[in-house]
Length: 444
Image 1 (cartoon, rainbow, N blue to C red):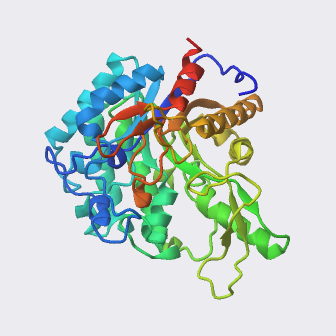
Image 2: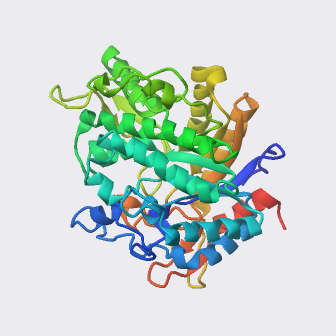
């Protein structure tokens, strides 16, 4: 890069993130029950390359090797997720000792290397048995989630340094229950609003359960996007406001005590008295995942079931996912959150930031990924500007440590600082791994 990164404050947390279904494999070992992603990926046509997470990166068996990679990076924290069906194979009842034992070993392995464990309780892998009863469309799942949170905290609450209840509930609602692109593959469009409310209710109940069992801070991770209106009409601006309310505010306003924003097509009748108070239980951290801005305009089809069209932003370079690369969007997003929520906004942790590119090994077995280095460099500079402008950000976690199973894209998209050969499972640190290590620890 043309100049060194600006200096981040002492105590700023550098980390990396993963999720259970994307890396663990071992989907039927040690008492683990099936998740909705096991069921979804085994249905033909759901994943572009026909793959599953049955093996993934085999982290379940190779976690010690992966902890060594984390130690080599010099990061202070590792954000991982716990697979609910490992803890409760059917989503209810007592904890499965084999599942808890795995995370017990992982957490101790991290602490032995001086790495803070950051645990996400739900990263989309709902036990299939709960989905068979309605999944997040049913209110009961919120209570089951709180019970599960208590089981995990009862075992790990003395060692996990930060708890994240839910990962990207907007994406799980919209892709899993609205559009059918992710597990469980339902297509309810705006009738998926109960999924939003029951996830948030589960979050609030889990916060209460966690408070009773751990003194560590608690938060939630949302995916956010700056909305760029692509048009000049009042209808275009209205479409942009609706999308902003749906994507950015639906899962933030109620958590921070503002209640739900008005969104066309949603049914508030499922909100029971006291629910909003439960959802607004105080949190200590807001996880922010940022990847790209989103272009929005009024729907071109008057019969469209959606009140907006999503349109490409052509002025930016793109990743292999086709996502626009815009570091300034991170600054815009963070300062916008500060402006919108003021003193209600808890300290922010950037719990995911990263990019996919078509990374390959060269003839010497090395993996050069200069585009990822440039991506991270630009976004960290934008982050520093936001902090200089008064946004309280406590840490940055790169997505991801490893190339992994990328949901409906299977193994066709690589986000890792470490290249994974999915035939041999060999790990090869990329150029970006060394760059991030030097960013965290200083050049050797």
